[in-house]
Length: 189
Image (tube, rainbow, N blue to C red; front, side):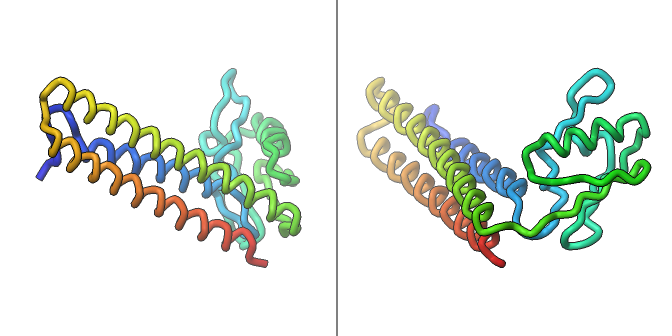
């Protein structure tokens, strides 16, 4: 049943913590490992039709081979813009234009680049942990306020605070597990 105590909603806090973990997983999807992944191009935005659009709104991204991505640009007039956007995205990719099809070979990662990607992964994970801890702090402050305003008892405060801490611990552990998996993926040769 709903775990709600007069203004305190544990399920909402857990949903927000899950959102922080989901954001981390999405950011990790854009971190390059040795294999081609269509999510690698998620951060690429193209200047098209007078606005800045995500790449997947101006063409179809595919991974036909383990070390190759392709972008089938729908509008011939945007091919140059897409090429330029991929080159300037800071992903270390060198696209090759073939009509409306852009081929993007994925170069093997150097040891130095792998270490850089691992540092970036750690930074993303730390941001996710900070987000989870901020959600925990919000929950704890609400519980303190509810107790101070005599809307919940000291026992209810303690019980709910333990639940908030448990949710925080499990989400931080999940972040650590996701990070360990991503590190392993990045460092595989």
